[in-house]
Image 1 (cartoon, protein in one colour):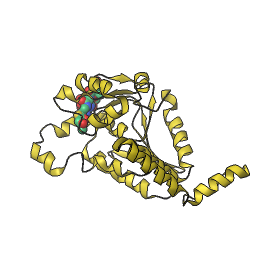
Image 2: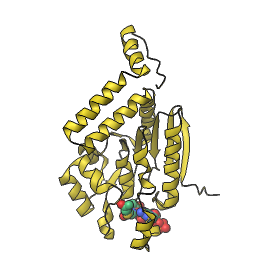
Image 3: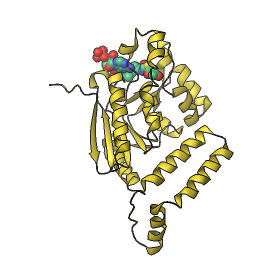
Image 4: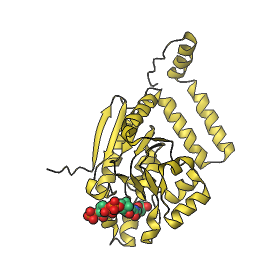
Length: 259
Ligand code: CAA
């Protein structure tokens, strides 16, 4: 019997793992999948036992984009009134814990945009990134025209968006689209190890760092620095920060309570 659930959810210690699962459609992102992904992300975000979240796909595709079959006959009013993309894809923007994409195979269109919406991207050697919406006379509408230039600069982003150019993992690494490249056979193991390391740190400190780095995209340097400084000052109200500094000086491992 085939498993019709569009995602699978597991926990590995303090790491929540979400696997996109529409193998026949190369994980094309339809509403059922994006609703389930949003719900799983929110559940992990609310779970005090989870410190980091990993999203992955299959060996062949992280995700081949928004579901073209579902979209083909939609009208403007359909998408405007139902607030397509905003209503469920953007749940990821509200997640406060670190989210890591583990990408093998195709990350195309909305799949590339989903990866770009994550905080860290670990790419397998087989990963391929493209925003090919121009081939459909569409446009990258899940953040691609905004996040890609912030990640790789205008020249590369325009090239990718206007020509549908596909990047391999090494190019994506060189251009700053991904955080690291690893062999395919080690993708999940290495990403879970990274997520486990991140999740072992103090959760409120991780959340403050995520918020501060994201602020760099959204504000002037002066405003961003002020935000960062306030976040640093707030660390002095955290039991974990005092524990971290005392443990360092005592030459022992810190015991974080995520407070
Ligand atoms: N939506 C729906 N179905 C898709 C799909 C998608 N985005 N991508 C692949 N599929 C389906 C194919 O239709 C095919 O189904 P059938 O077996 O029923 O024919 C199956 O998945 C396997 O795909 P292919 O036979 O095409 O596999 P391939 O290995 O030859 O090619 C690929 C792989 C290059 C990724 C190719 O599938 C492809 O180009 N897919 C579309 C990519 C794309 O255009 N993405 C952008 C979507 S629009 C978007 O995302 C808008 C936005 O910003 C929100």
